[in-house]
Length: 271
Image 1 (cartoon, rainbow, N blue to C red):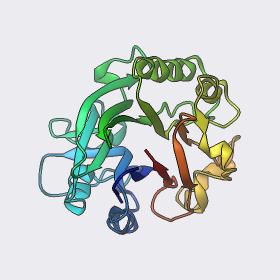
Image 2: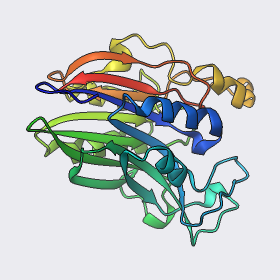
Image 3: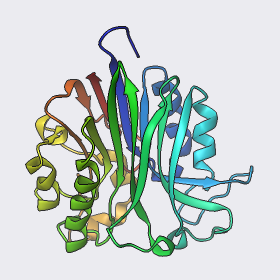
Image 4: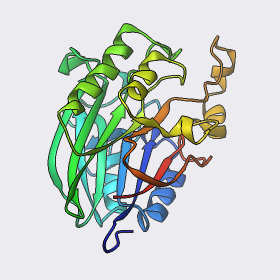
């Protein structure tokens, strides 16, 4: 939805649950692609082999390739982590997991970086990471940071590792002067210091500002009925969008769609 003069952009962030809810996810992506400029995806698997393989968790090992086939007008920027031990059985020779940003043509990368979470994680034993890409839009630079935060422990409250994760993301982006948008699955509850660090750094928390009631949605409860018996129950939050106050936000929504165990965050802005 690029226009002349000021540029209207739509950015969507989604933890794909590894393609577990495959057909509804693919339909959503195909339909959304018409009006979307940037996708930030988490829990992406990539398999160089042509035939899809399904892990015992129901994840599709070639999800990156499946998405690429359905997004021919986009270029993917994939940031893998090497460890796949939590996605058995897979062949580590071929399969990678990570995060991916898809940019609609003619958007292109000016700068990029990927980093492991938490800080100090070993590349051979890391399951979470973040990436940023900087693009040029309307003569200005705009940076997107795509985050898949630490999932364990499952209570999603503060831990030393999660606090270090927030500091790492903010420190990595601190040297970037252009407009920044940080999106993704942070695996955090709203009242944590790990979330407040972004607000204290001057970012607007759009999930809070727009009074979003859940980023997990009704499908989360269907896919994970076992969570009802856990001490923390069904946690309604994990995902966030942080933007700088100077960004002109036109619309922000988190629709309850049955495409994953997370909900898509849809941001319309003008740059």
